[in-house]
Image (cartoon, rainbow, N blue to C red):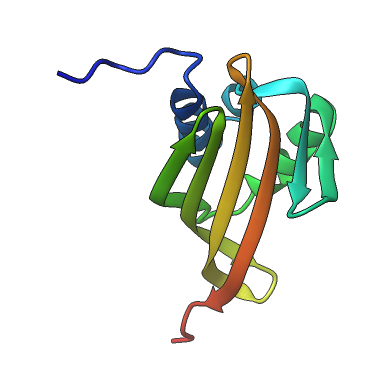
Length: 127
């Protein structure tokens, strides 16, 4: 019998982050990140550092009407969680989707660092 993950389990933390992202709940999402968390475009381009910058980044993203991240696969090794996702977005050129790899480093029950590797943007077919 499989037991439920502990709240500080890296898998549970990242799942709460994904659920909050899809609910567009910025407060719940930020609760999964350390106060001094950093996000990067892989390997080292800093995108946001700390709660204030993260809040603004997510606030802007949550304005998109069709935003949704669908988990394709998750790999966990210790405190590192790698999610392969398909993200539906509204780009400046119109609605579409892209594949995304997210790498999370979970420390003390919160995401300390996150890296994104963005795949090719695919725009929806025009009607």
